[in-house]
Image (cartoon, rainbow, N blue to C red; front, side, top):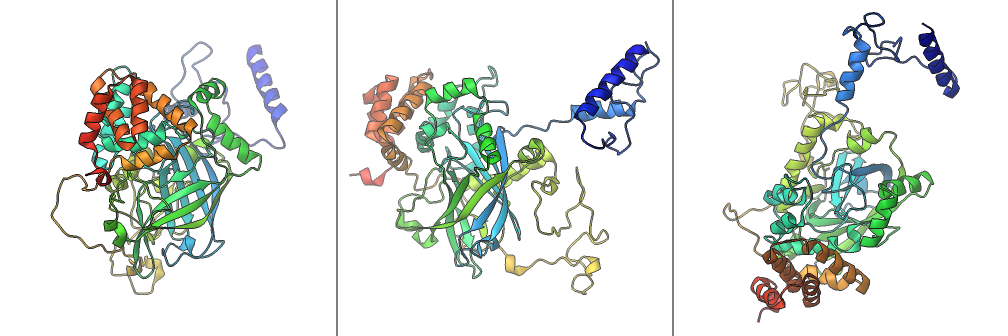
Length: 527
């Protein structure tokens, strides 16, 4: 009895010491008040715990279900709230309303992430970084789901599961293994462009604030007249940095496991709000044939110096608020390129076409079919849909007896009966089609040219680090044929690039030159 009174007194004293004003009564999730949150209900002083202690059972059962499935990719992430302001009226390019007036303000939520590594991984590991932005526009949500790097490893969604399997830990050893990674990549010469970006210092960002972002894929801008232009999106950091060297990353990892998250939170907390400008790289489809590469190939980049591309800076995004709850916002935020608004549509990019399904599908698996109604994902405008029920349904039906469309009540002017009509003004754009169905690689592969251009754009320091980082992984690969292939891809991109990589991996130059000559697909080099 004395011990019970003493424990109760200690708990009360500690609770009151930190209390300010009136303390609210603790309740169960049902709202019922809790009488004792310190002791389970037992059968006397020595008996077992009683199953009738509903508060205990609720706590334990709820605790067992606090975790949701980890994202297969982009598991390690951090988010922040902010605002996007348009620099002008871009109605000539797109019907998207958030871009129809200078200074127009649109709320955003951004999630930065690493792609391959697990939720508990250090933020210093080399990895592409997700750069996903959710725009809460007046006509619904738009998700611009991208990366910090402008291209990707593969060009067809059918290879995405295989690629991720190769990059993830070995199912036997549970360790990431360059032997598996480059065994797969050796069959995909188009991947050399991504590796040329990833093995540079930007593959290990110094800060999230300093990263550029890229939509990677081409999308479509459609204006009110139905004119279609293709567009790539690029976020330009207004506080840029060049990333970390491998030695710097090792040093930081020993000091700060979460250096990117901590830096972002510190800067926002100190009122030093990071910002990015959004650039649209626009191309008319009539110019596609003038290019010697396929502009819808996700392993290729566009730039503002290309004659076929015109660039417009659309506006500025500023992140100014840290989420009040990490799980509810960062973890429950769900992004998909299938979430778009009138004026922006997906292109025929083969990798993007697969992502339109897989990204939304993975969120339905992780969070349930009603994930779009979670606060972080929910549109700010009204949602008028006849979709219903399912796991986690919380939105009450506005017109419960009329849950189908078309219906006989539509058009009678009685709003209480649920007049939801499709509006032909928002039909998708039309595209001319020709030819037969096929399963065939794109005609203009041009696997190596842009990788060479990227290599030549680097400083001497960046090239040195690229070679050292790339060679460090390749020197762990036991199959020399795989190493020869990867070095040959670098050589086909740029002879200096390949020669230096061959030297760093002790690879036969004769074998490299022979393979490079047989695979080079650049028409400029053909004689």
